[in-house]
Length: 326
Image 1: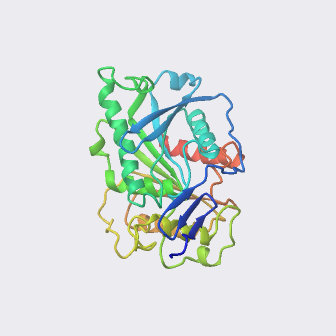
Image 2: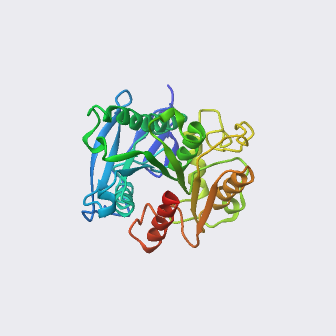
Image 3: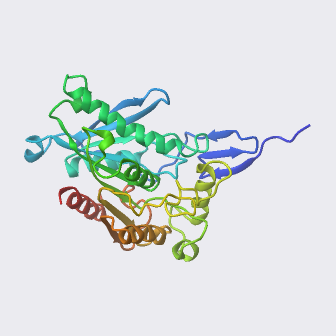
């Protein structure tokens, strides 16, 4: 008689992988924050991928500023984090963050969900991110004859001014979208991506950086959690040097000649991943990419998403606004 299945990976108590390959997910998640909804933005959900039952959440300013009201709203995609294993557009930190982005930046925020590992290992999330931006292209093409969603009707949003923001694993997705779409995003016409904002992008590698090896654990994150995320997220039998985890790994494509749109990288100075993110920025700068790297000293992972109405969040929003309007 065989032994009963036992837990081989336990991810924050939210996801458990058993020895027989089965997965258990808990809906009873204890959040350390509440939704901060001040009425400055409104939202609704839309299905964007019927095959995989994936939805996105649209946000727009409740009362656009006089300048925004006179012009179509730029579009800002927000890909949330969660190590590719946990998270949802409905989680309070993601929801509050998107409300804040919509009202503070006077944009239409598009926040898609994506399939999660280990049930759906990479490249599932990358494929879903591409499907999500292709959805906007379909809406743009429908807008001329009135077939688009009413929030995306002709003249309401500016399909020529689209920005992609990603936090943590969402920052990883933003990187892969930048590489896939290339400068000018010709495959999305008439949609035009103008730039990418990577907030502490979740990259990996089998060789530890100094901050990974020596940095103190953060309040919500440590190297053991990062390693577990990668074990659950990369294709079975692979390591954190997989090209979807490590942009500069031994099997990763050479990006020297890749023509990319501008990239803004934001990171907290006390993040375990800080050195790896800095290496990413330095290598892209050496390749001649248009990339800006900004450190918020003393801040830990998720400092903007988890506290989008804080003083440091205001500085983040100022930096993103400058990036969007330069």
